[in-house]
Amino acid sequence: MTMECRVGCGACCIAPSISSPIPGMPAGKPAGVRCIQLTEDNRCRLFGKPERPSVCTQFQAALDICGEGRVEALINLSRLEKLTAN
Image 1 (cartoon, rainbow, N blue to C red):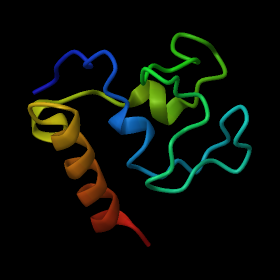
Image 2: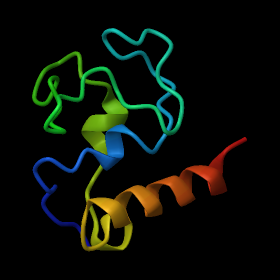
Image 3: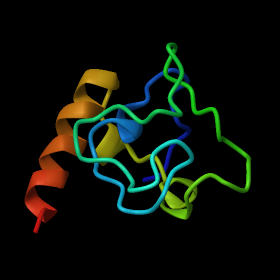
Image 4: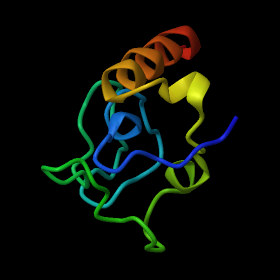
């Protein structure tokens, strides 16, 4: 079930690895590393901009992934990252 992203969560910009280039992170980012484009208040500087990686644009917040809050989202996304790591 999709939902609206929680403003200021940023879990999807920290927990998963991103293999595509991100402005300021040309090799992408490893799992657990904060994206350089994530602001101090956990908002994406690239939101709505064409340079935002397609993997980020395609992510859909969902209750079963994002849970009831930021901490649960970080736990769930970290667990999914470990389960799908090569």
